[in-house]
Image (tube, rainbow, N blue to C red; front, side, top):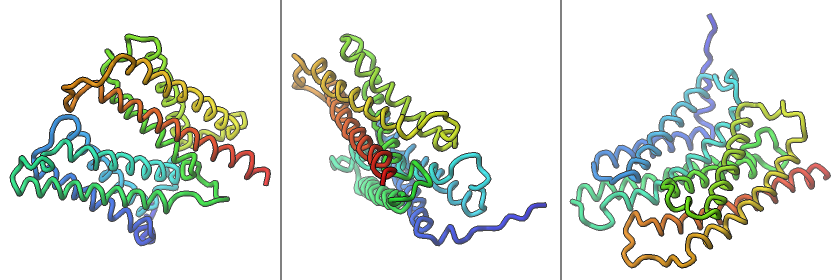
Length: 293
């Protein structure tokens, strides 16, 4: 019968200590939010899902490393943990912004006890984001270290790009705004194509499948990043033209105003365009400058 040796060292490393804080803070955030019993609609549900999801996965990561199972899993563990830390940081950051608008403590319409729970949940979420951001910084590959692609700046940007694309899809989930004009359909095609390819790169990297691809992957990624920059550049120009030309913001535009959703897609398109540009610069530097040196 095989003997399982516990790796207690994984718990006292800087990354292990940060993960303890992540688990505590995410658990505290969703506990406080649940205790308040006041959060509204899809935004509140998303925040609760984020904190619970991050808590569960962080616990699983610590258990896997404690029992030494990471080396036996058929995946690149370093890539997986780096990608999750980046994803968790983005999700918790989004929740830290969304939860105050989904709750009532900012408006002062709740009782003192409920407002205190909601304000504390928001504070815990903000600190939890800082903890995950610290883990991203601690696990990020240093110059010359290429052991895991998703721990590099281009790899982390891949996670960011995929997440921003998901936010875009959530804002254009109503089909009416973009089935009217061909330009809007083109933008949706750009978002979808880039998201699918980026997500495929992430999955293949975690699954250790990139080494089986029979062509120079690094140069192909540079070419893909250049193509993605061009595609997002067209989307960043076409989307505002087709959505805001002759369409001023309505005087009565509430919380779920479709005009605000279209504006959010515009800003997110520019965010992803900048991310792909930075990704292209770093990827080109890694392939053509570092390799040559």
